[in-house]
Amino acid sequence: MAKQFGVGDDALAGLHDPASHPFPPDQKAALQFADAMTNGPGQVPDPVFGELRRHFNEPQIVEIACVVGLFNYFNRFNNALHVEITLMDPDILVRRIEEAAAGSAIPLSDLCDRVAGILKEGRRYARVEISRRQDETKATGGEIVVPIRASGKVVGVITAESDRKEAFDDEERSLVERVAAVLAPRIA
Amino acid sequence: MGRLNRLRPDQVGADIRSLFETFLKERGNIPNMFRTAAHRPEILNTMLAHFRSVMGPGTVPVALKEMLAVRVSRINSCDY
Image 1 (cartoon, rainbow over the protein chains, first blue to last red):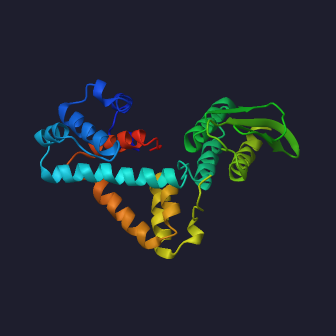
Image 2: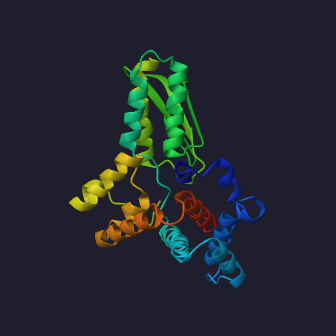
Image 3: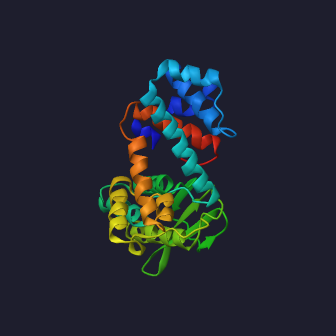
């Protein structure tokens, strides 16, 4: 989400350790304040608050403290209730893949790359391979293999790997099977 | 798996369903946190209103607020 609001890759990487990244002084002051407010019981030392004050007025400080407070609230809610990361809606993902597969002019290998890309981004799979291998369905903790069938015959296979634990439940398997059904006529 | 059920659009009232549909249109998903909070529609409504007024355009740049959100989430080991 942050990227679409103009936060660059460099800044995102710097957020792992803001103290050693050359953020502008106002951003650094706000980030130090966020760290102090988030770590432990949220006691912000006077020098950290003083630095924030040098760069921001009172309405701005209220806004910054609300952002930090809101994300502590959301993070704790999600951590405590094991709310998982949000993935792309299966119907929307299948629709995107149908649209990608509709253009018959695309070479098959490009189509497979594109479909793999949509699955990886939308469902956060670590690895997706689409090939003409002929394996049967199997799902282990971190991997699922779904055959692509055309006229009752296996014509290829989608292998997806996840770095999330328990990533491949029934919902996930049915999603990959729908993707296989979309690809079948192109691969056969 | 989440500890609580995430409600689907067909399991919520009309007002929450229209909020969900807006999310689907704008982002291609309904955040799981909001699907979970939908068990208490009044709370979800004000949660979203508060989220928008805090994170939307205000007195500090939206990009800085996103950076703060990422930083806080990293400290809390929460994926944002």
